[in-house]
Amino acid sequence: MGTVEAVESEIARVNAAIEALEPKIEKAEGKAEAAENAGNTEAVQRWFTELQQLRKKEEQLRKKEEQLREEKARLQFA
Image 1 (cartoon, rainbow, N blue to C red):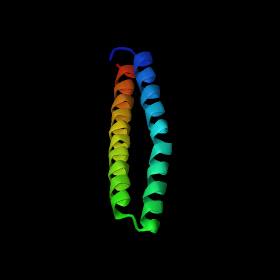
Image 2 (cartoon, rainbow, N blue to C red):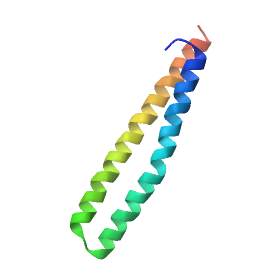
Image 3 (cartoon, rainbow, N blue to C red):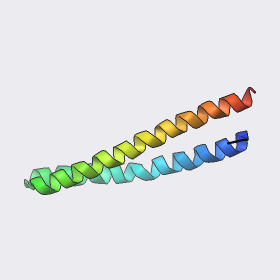
């Protein structure tokens, strides 16, 4: 990536993306629970699939953040 500042900027972007996912995950959890309580198995499956996708995206972003933090440390001590 190049400079520490560039890496810090990318870390901030990734953190913002993670934060943006949190309300979406909470919404999907609530919708899945409501659908389950209503006995709507089709909606439960749909929201569960959505929830899985959101969590997978969050996990990918967290891995990216960790990689960026490692890169920042390498740049700082190079």
